[in-house]
Image 1 (tube, helix red, strand yellow):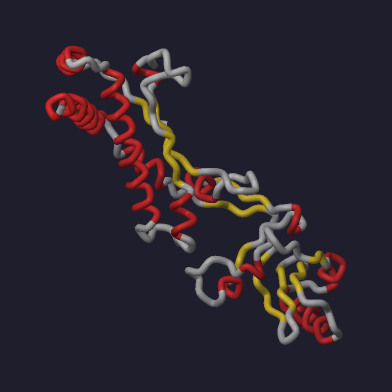
Image 2: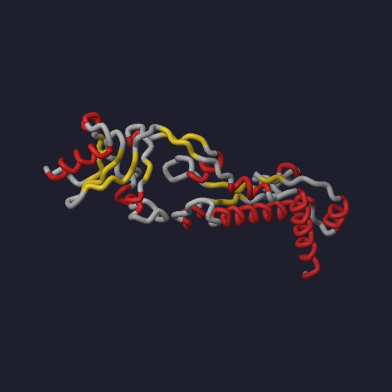
Amino acid sequence: MLQYSDNREAFEAALIRAGYSLQDAGVIAINKAADVTAVRYKSALSSGRIKLRAPTYTKGAVRILKAHAMHSDKKRMRKMENINAIVGVMARANGQEHYLATMEVGGEKKGSRKTGGKVAVPLLAARGGNDMKPIAPAYRVTTHTPVQLQDAARRAQNVRQQYAMMYAMAKRGLAVGLYQTDDAIFSVSKRKVRMVRKTDRKTIRVKAIPLFGESVGQINQDAMDRYFKYGAKKLLDKLETK
């Protein structure tokens, strides 16, 4: 959340003489700062510091809630310190936190119920052999819950043995689908068995890459001074053009 508060007597006097309030210019300033922050953040996402596999979807999650000088009742003016705009990332459609939010602060990613409490880490095969592509629809555990083979997995002590077990089951007519052992998720089709995800851990550490924090940090007091002057000039210029 970006906030703006300042007391420039000269600007205030000029705005009031013109019939405007300090809040009117403050709204323009804070919304300008929000727009600049969002642009810088999206640019940082494309800078190569992270793997942006679905740029349209990822950048589309960045939203701005604009600042307003009036309260929601349209009758009362907000105090200057209560004028703010919010730049953030929308939650995912299933209500879970967006991965950009997780990336910003880092922490632990936990496994889900669909994968037996394990973290399903995509392998190159899940992305069609291209690490810059999104996970192929057939291998998304959000839409295809893997069949759990925990008993069979305990009899196979490593991934190679688990793969051999899955291949043997496929030759005997195992139905097409996703199957999970203790260490991996396998895709079984009519022609082949493919390991598409690792599931050997219940939690994984997510490294913090605070691209959003860095973008917000570039909005300092000098920048806000410029934006306020921009806002005041924009309002005053309106009168000259009328």
